[in-house]
Amino acid sequence: MSQTDARPATLPDPRRWKALIFIGLAQLMVVLDATIVNIALPSAQRDLGITDGNRQWVITAYALAFGGLLLFGGRIADLWGRKRTFTVGLIGFALASALGGAAVNTSMLLGARALQGVFGALLAPAALSLLAVTFTEAKERAKAFGIYGAIAGGGGAIGLILGGLLTEYMNWRWTFFVNIPFAIVAAAGAVLVIREPAEGRNRNKLDVPGVLLVTTGLVSLVYGFTRAESAGWTSGSTLGLFAAAAVLLAAFVVVELKVKAPLLPLRVVLDRNRGGVYLSLGMAVIGMFGLFLFLTYYLQIVLGYSPVLTGVAFLPMVAGMITGSTQIGARLMTRVPARYLMAPGFLVASVGMFLLTHIGLDTSYPALILPGLVLMGLGMGTAFMPAMSLATHGVQPRDAGVASAMVNTSQQVGGAIGTALLNTIAASATTTWLASHATAAAAASPEAAKALQFQGMVHGFSTAIWVSFGILVAAGAVAFTFINAGRPDAGPGAGAGADDAQNDAVPVLVH
Image (cartoon, rainbow, N blue to C red; front, side, top):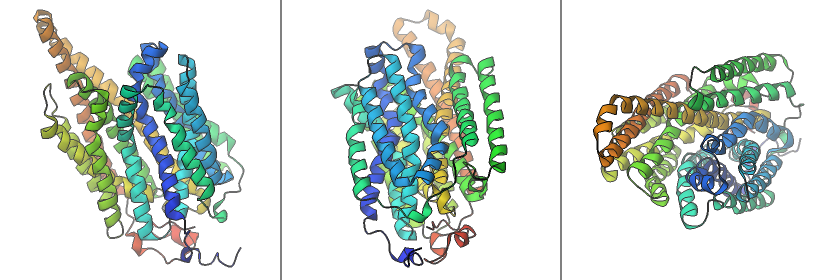
């Protein structure tokens, strides 16, 4: 050990704020890529002749690879080093994006999306754990995580805006090519600016059985929800996938209890604060993805917005997220316990969701959609910031990567579940509504029949948004019940060791 190791907190990295720029840029690229392709998908489908049955795989291939491999990526970051994993993830993501932009057929595009997910699973946990070990002073960390939380929360909406602009004014392929400059700048910044403490490396061997079990288990779970959208919830294939996921994940827990160097030390998730963050954040993302999905369709199909105007319509939500994260969450995090930010944040977001359940065929954007989006953004931004910080609360440095990966896993799995679950609910509600109005539709003029079709669609969207509202309320209850960490400034002194910090119920990272 060097003679400076006894007082690391007194020597913060002088380039830490520059490092945050490149870490944030990489996170923005990964998050927006989850939604930027959505708006471009119709154009890509026409250009490449993708069938209706295969088009969902452009989204699902990314989510399956990303969600299924995140824990593996987090542990790789702990083994290889976070900076190296971060850089490899960026370069690989750029190459996969170039392959997607140059795709000449369906298989090439789906393969590129899966590769993006693989390298995203390396990149995302490395980015968050780098942030965790770079900012250790409570107030600085609150600001850093506030910015990171705003990026993580608003990146999806920014993806919708950027996707609309690129698709409408350039070409769908640019929704892939745009990642390349992001990745090059972030990789160059990582090499030149980012440093990581050498003592945080995990030298244990990789838990191969754990990797195989959790990856196949999560893929089965995500694919089960995706399959339910087309085959139905009670079909043999859907139930089989859910059963396989349950068996594989149960076996994973048994293996993790017995192996010497587990992929996911159960102490990471059994801590009530971290467990509360992973569960409540995953639930909130289920509701949030539902909003993106249905509001995008509603604005374009029912209200007739263009792709660009649809993206612009989400800007108030992005502004709300940034405000909630940096001005509310970051300012209050050092003054009040985290659950008094997360639980009210989720509840404020649920009020915005409640407003959006009242959409109709001619809903006014300024009167109803705008305030709903602003409340959603403020609430989620306020809750995301302490969630990102608490995700690595009290973990040993060698577990920082896998603890960070759990945040992204909860988001990706939550997003995939939300898309499939809420889409199925909306489709079922629309079918039921149209069936009950079939007589009126048969006797209606073409214009009236189209209006009835739209009304059924809006009824389905509204029903799914009601479910999202309930899930957000439940997320607030989970956050308030499980999370009991105190104020960050109540933590141990700068020189506190990792073992001491683990016993303190405060969201202070040690290194």
